[in-house]
Image 1 (tube, rainbow, N blue to C red):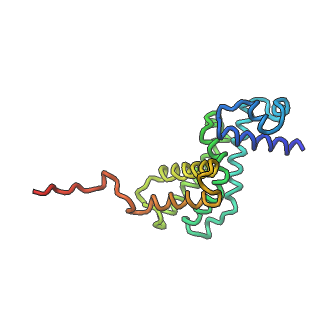
Image 2 (image 1 turned 135 degrees about the vertical axis):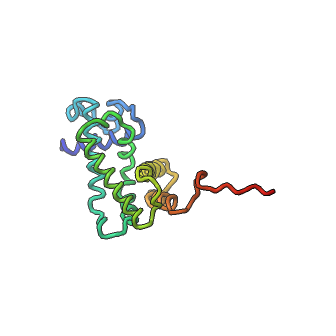
Image 3 (image 1 turned 180 degrees about the vertical axis):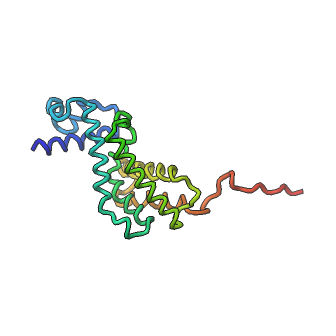
Length: 196
């Protein structure tokens, strides 16, 4: 029972803080349907709650992606499956991106960096397979994936995109936007000589 109530508090904290990072303990307790005293029995401080939520959010991302058989499929399909797995966790993803309090926590930092490296490795395989432009920075591509995960979740949350379409739309936006030679940048265009 206590374990279930603790999970309810964490779920409510994730949903609340994703929309209002400044939410108080009272706001979180109210959304969870518990009193502040109950919340403090599980988490002695707001900081302890945020740390627990951050670590659980990373664990949820791991659990969502661990069944994807990346080694048996093209990397492009692996990324599509990654979007499908993580977009529903967009509120947790947004919370992690906007919570500076945990950035320097050693345990959080280790897991977060490993997850970003896994994504970077997948991007690099996509480049080697030819589905992404090799000249695009891997760091840029990783940041773009992370941004699209948040945008997909936020669009579902505000009702502008159907839940069933969000992951596919995010994936399509990423892949088509980074196809080799799809777009020219201003610096890559050759200046045409003026007509005399």
